Length: 330
Image (tube, rainbow, N blue to C red):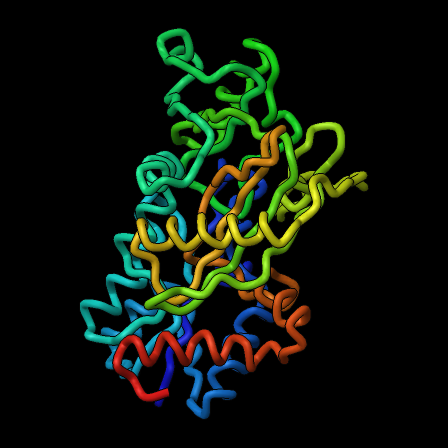
């Protein structure tokens, strides 16, 4: 089969003069596209490098024909951006692996995601949505410390050491920075100070949770090191520590929570969920990403190494399951 690869690389970001320095953090290096192509070839199919959602739109108008597609586009411009490519593929009748447009749009909204996941019985920190600093006085908030981040972003965009706040003045400044710089609501949630873990899940009926990875945290702010070192963030040699050991019982709980969130949000084929532990060791859901990076140094590549599996083989298995779900030969 001809399998289209729909993706955004860093050089494709449509920069504007007032964009924040981390605006392209959700985009990918060319090496990620190479990894997708290698996985498709591992399955015995032909990868077709299409490019961005706008390139897909033009090529479909020009008569592009595909048997299926793998979409990892984040796009840019609005809270609907992750739906651009899946909708185009759906309108063209091309099966697409991964979650559909509705789930991608929903999970980009951190507030709606938390509400749905909490209703499914997964603990998540209490939160509030704030549209401007002036709205803080009229908004019921959890007790300090609090964590402030953009409502509709991924890849740790908008997170700095000042995202953890302990006073009303610091909260006001953090909300002002987020709403002004990212031109969207700020999500203000109770800060969970313990260890941080990420859980990859693949497949369907039922989804399979892969080995949990523990993330290092910066010891002063207790923010995950990966969040402080994201693309576009100021470069610094951060210290780090690893808090709270990963036990078999904790891993089992994280797996259960991830599968519940995956099902409640109607994700398909692959996703990655993030958790932190409170002072009692209880895990709290932070967010889920049904468009996780497949970069050669990302979560899925690390898991492949831990499992002793070649990366093209692991991704090939993930995409092969997805193609079978869609009724395509794999």
